[in-house]
Image 1 (tube, rainbow, N blue to C red):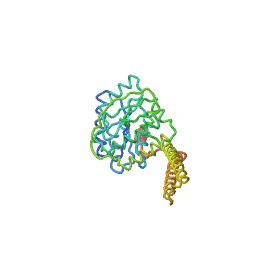
Image 2: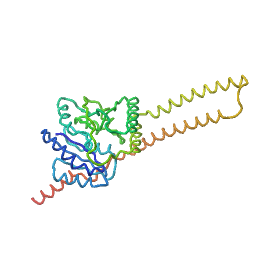
Image 3: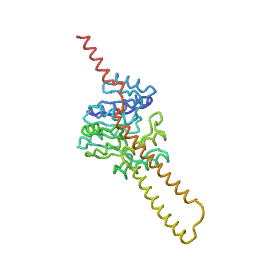
Image 4: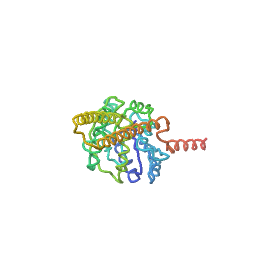
Amino acid sequence: MLSVIIPAYNEQENIENTEKVISGILEKAGIEYEMIFVDDGSSDSTWEIIDRLTDKNPSVRGLHFSRNFGKEGAIFAGLRRCTGDCAVVIDCDLQHPPELIPEMVKLHEQGFEVVEAVKASRGKESFVYKIFAKWFYGIMKKSSNVDLDRASDFKLMDRKVIDALNDLPERITFFRALSSWVGFKSTKIEFEVAPRNAGTTKWKFGKLVSFALNNITSFTNFPMQLVTALGMIFFVFAVILGIQSLVRFFSGTAQEGFTTVYLVILLAASMIMIGLGVIGYYMSKIYEEIKFRPRYIVSIDTKDKERKENNAANGENG
């Protein structure tokens, strides 16, 4: 059986169409499936629509978070509760083409344990977004040897991969990188990014910056290495400046004043503060990890509701 995991946050315009399109494709291909919508604490009617769909389609299951925990939490909640032999993670807005799912299942049947859908192009993204993405993925590749260029969250994983991801103890997760980091036999399939079916993107620039910082610091120590490298550069600069000052002093050409001293002090102080800021950021991440709070809290699981209704019905019949 295939599990289809669909994170959703304020996607009331897309839920019904997404369920209709994906179920139609899978039923036509003769693929047994369960569809898990994970409502990430939406403030619109997303959960009410998911709840209605579970009554109409027994293959649909809904998870509702107690508040907004983020897409990473929604993905891992779906992975934790899915029951399929393999699972596909796909966006709710259908920018990931569901028509590829049967082909991904065939590749899984051929022995591939991870089938990654990669972007043939970045679609209609803004110039700033493309530059930001290139910078982010460049840092990830150089610092962690995980190539995320053209990568997406749209991928199929075997049960062994799902179990490996669920066994990871860390609280701060980056699904796109971790699903590559765990290894296993994998292959790639290209897709064109489709326009959103409805609604607007929830990824504003500030949220993207925060997302990038969290994932860079949770997956690599590159910022600390960068501070060390800058410290070495400024050390070389200080040595050269010191030699120059001594030469001028003994040759009698040294200029009066403290401009150079002020400049060196300001540069040194700036580097120290930046270094302390980076160290403090990593310490905050360590603090978050050692508290060992859950990645998410599921307030409603329609499977539990269905189980209670069945128990009540059986009690009445008894």
